[in-house]
Length: 296
Image 1 (cartoon, rainbow, N blue to C red):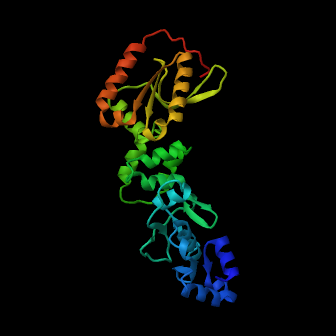
Image 2 (image 1 turned 90 degrees about the vertical axis):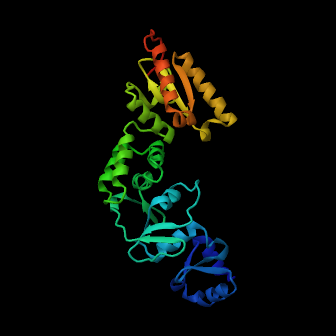
């Protein structure tokens, strides 16, 4: 491959034929030899990288600078640690759909658009709402866990154009009023409210006597001095996780808290048993003399 063309591809990922007139012959030769591939008309990438979703996303933005990625595509562009999308979802008035691209004429409020380099995508709040129904609220939980404010989610919902599933998203957003950070926590909140079990705070910061943050209690019953943790296998099964949890529980116990841990599967698969255990905990500790030594 021509050295200058190779350098451009290494630097930018995608080249536009119209912007590289001196390299027209080099581009044509590389295309014929299979070294580069047309991602979109007039836009080329190294063949080995042409299926990469990020390369395709760059090509989309070069073809239509006003294009905005949304849904699972926006979620992955915001956090590439997950599984990359096979089909990119984009709002564009100019582009047409193809095997790897699903183009929509959707209009997205400018206030709900963020940019990362050349890429424009829906803000995390709108992305969470777009995915809420298909993930049964997990996308909202993820956004809250990463620092999104509940008020910002409600604001995004108000600005979000009417779409199918709006009622379901409103319900899921309402279920998020106690700000769950996982699907299991969301289920626990729903079950506790249905059972009339009150006076708890979700994801409450717990401090030491010196004001140091020990951690966030998944469900904290202050009056009873009980901290309930709901452990998903993803975050609490590795040896390092177990040691961390034990050290944290020991510190909380020394401060006077009662710590009870439940696997996420227990909450999801057998909510009646979970509620019975909570009632037993509160009955056992609700009336005791509190000797909790803490800053908050």
